[in-house]
Length: 115
Image 1 (tube, helix red, strand yellow):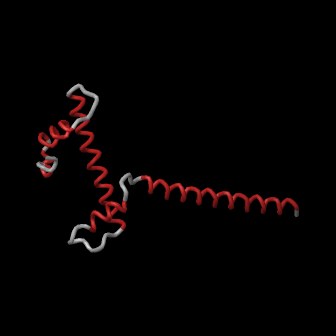
Image 2 (tube, rainbow, N blue to C red):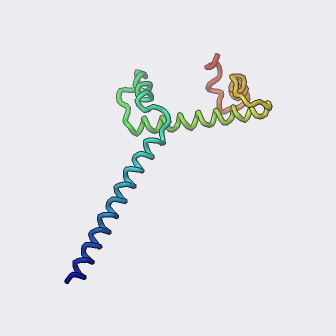
């Protein structure tokens, strides 16, 4: 009988430890998803609501806009850094951004915005 009770207690311990692991993983995944956004979501939501055509902005829409904005900034800065390195400099300057905006067709919609 003592052997059966020990086996049951070991099984219960394993179940409890596996539940703790699952809960820990869930907490970590929630923290990881929060860290995915580097831009403040509340600020993005307020910018979105400043448009008179927007009345409500769902959380999914705000997250999508935030991620798209982060990717756009990353791509623009990557291109500007490439221009800086071609000029054999280590410091990113405004003229690098201007050069990228003038030479790359994908940034034509930004023409005149930095003036």
